[in-house]
Length: 187
Ligand code: ADP
Ligand code: 5GP
Image 1 (cartoon, rainbow, N blue to C red):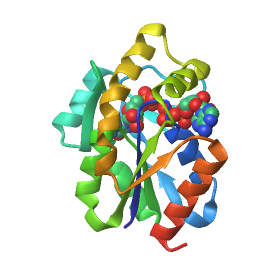
Image 2 (cartoon, rainbow, N blue to C red):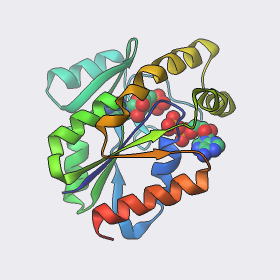
Image 3 (cartoon, protein in one colour):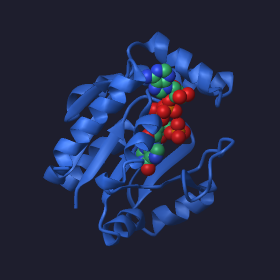
Image 4 (cartoon, rainbow, N blue to C red):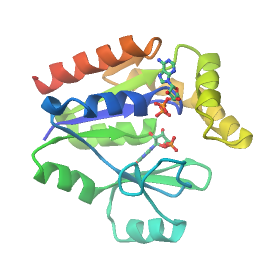
């Protein structure tokens, strides 16, 4: 089973790129829906964007060893890949697409070895990243600062990934992502 991993600082454009790839039926990709303990954003759907959980529910899954990987991406906010998600997609004869943080991305890559393509999405600059996060207007000022603060650290992980896409103009980034994924999947 082949898997494609997208990692990047928050606001770099992972979700936008992943959605584009999922809209191409011939790629036969399916999104690995992660568990997380943050509040849903307006328009986010439980079971589609994330499995939204309370910290206690998350801990329970952790104790039951149900996670392939998990991270405390921000202080007290946990995100994790459920083994059952990967199994579900495998049973469906599809390739998995992951949107995970940089550490999770590298753990998933290690798990799947040669069968994984790990792509780092890079914003053109931290200033542009800030603008995009502001425009998305999903975060409070405090949360925005937390995400930007972490971005500086996350950018250091770029060199551990198989490929890097600079998300400058969206059209270019989507084209590049599709090209790399098609090459890797042989489609
Ligand atoms: P992530 O999933 O990495 O946090 P998103 O895909 O949510 O990032 O993108 C963050 C915001 O930036 C969204 O509002 C998105 O519409 C916008 N965006 C993404 N790529 C570009 C781009 N190339 N140019 C301008 N805005 C973009
Ligand atoms: P957001 O709150 O913006 O949806 O996601 C915040 C960060 O958590 C992003 O970098 C996203 O890729 C990451 N993330 C989402 N799901 C998972 C997961 O299952 N595991 C890990 N390690 N990170 C995740």
